[in-house]
Length: 272
Image: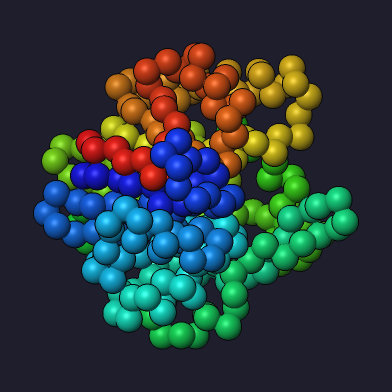
C-alpha cells in the first residue's frame, strides 16, 4: 500500500499547500482510493504534478462535513465522471466555526447533495471485505478541546461530530486506519476501529485536531502527554499525522513517541 499526500498545510518538497487534507491510497492489488479533497481544486492539481490519475480511482471518501476536507467535492465530480463518493449521512448538515467576528459557515456545498453520485453511510459501511467505513464513536476520552469552537446545525450547540467517519483498510496482514481530523478523539476512534474489524490498527494516518486547543500551555502539555501515552499502548503501531495536529503539538508528541510517529506533508508518500 502506498499513501500519498495531495493536500496538507505544509510541504517539504515545494508543492503548493492549503489548510486541508487529501490523501491518495494505492493498494497492492491495483485499486486506488481518494480520502478527502481539500478546499478547492488543489488536490487535483497536485495529483497531476505527482503523476497520479484521479480519473481512475475506484472510490472516494469525504471524512466529515467541513470545507477543508470536502470543499473539493465539486472539482472531483467534474474530474471523475463515474466513481462514487462515500460520506456520512449527516455530512451535509450545516457546520460552523467560532471566529473573532462570530460564527462562520464551514460546511459543504449543499447543492451537491442530490447529485446522484454520493453514497450516504451510517455507523458502519463495508464497501469491500477489506475496506470499511465507520462512525458511531460514542465516548469522550481525550477529545480535542478545540471542538468547543465548532458548532453544528443548532448554531448555539457544540458539534457532536456524528458526521465524522473513518476508513479502515486491511491488506497484507496490515490494518490501516485513516481519520481526517479525529474530532471524536483519535484514541476512541482507534477503539471503535478495533470493534469494527476485530483487531487493532497497525498503522494510523490522521490529523488529530490539537492545533486550536483552548487549554493553558500547562494543560495542553499534560493533554498531549496523556494522548501520546495512550497511543503508545497500541504496541508496534506506526502513526503518521498531519494537517490539524499542529507542528508544535506534533513536536510534543514526537518527543514522547519517538519513532512511533512521523509528520506527513504535502507531496510526501509512505509505503507500507
